[in-house]
Amino acid sequence: MQTLYRRLLKLAPKLGVQVLDIGPGEALVSRRRGRARISLEAGADLLARRSSGYGVTPVGPDAWLVSRSRGGGPKAKPKTAKWKNAALGQTGAHLLFDPEAAKGDERVFQLAAADYLCAHHVNGLLDKYQVNVVFDVGANAGQYGTRLRRHGYTGRIVSFEPTAEHFAKLQKKAENDPDWHVYNCGLGREEATMEIHSNWNSMNSLLPPTEYGKGRYKRFAKSTMEQIEIRRLDAVMDEALDGIADPRPYLKMDTQGYDLEVFAGAGKRIDDFVGMQSEVALLRLYEGSPQMHEAVAIYEEAGFEITGMYPVTREPATGRVVEFDCVMVRAAAVASDG
Image (cartoon, one colour):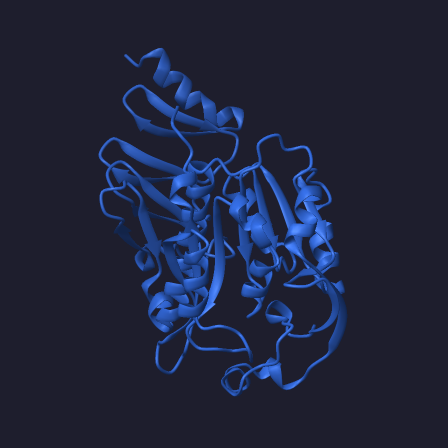
């Protein structure tokens, strides 16, 4: 004799619903037809529409990546076979990647990984050193500030961007964030009015390109100059820190060869910073910019020590690193657990 449970399952399709028998005493009842069961392992199944093109990739014990090829639809094929899974040591984290895309240009893959690892490292330092205000110098269109928020930083951001086009984008990005302050100026050693190359997108600089730079980037062939205001960092700090009872600032600089000038403009107030980040060059793109060893020596003399170096760009032909993101802290300023 059929159980009441089985009778109900047989009756369900007549009521306009689909029944997918999952196992003893279990069934999926759905108004939509065409459900399919994709086996993950014994005792674990994925239920999806037959036409969805879903695929499954194992990610460690008891975990799977569920992905669908672009477009979906009845003819869509899952990308399951392409995904590779690499365990990241004993951390419990896994790196999922398409080996076909990764082997096309390993520099792209490595630099993307370095960018993520740098952001993750900085986020950890901001927490460890209890940073409550980040000075974002050379903010461009607000990419760094956006990334800080995405990684969970909730303190104040003070961004500086001198060019009109990129400041407008920065201002729009920060307009709904009450603790993201923006300044339409550059920072340097002296307060002045200067001209900046403003049509090099994310590489706008107060400095002209070197011959090496011209050979590497076509954008340097044409120049549009824009007059901008330059201020000293120590002249704006009190205003930027207003309302923060116990400021613990972090300085990020990405000014295309001008970081040491920004650093000099902090004067004695550089001692207030618990950490910093600077783009340092092994191969110079801009005339008059320091090489990595020169910049790092000055930062170290001011009391900062390196916690991480992450490649920003590489030469396509040789694989040499052009620039690193150099992350540094004052070890004595680490926040006490108590």
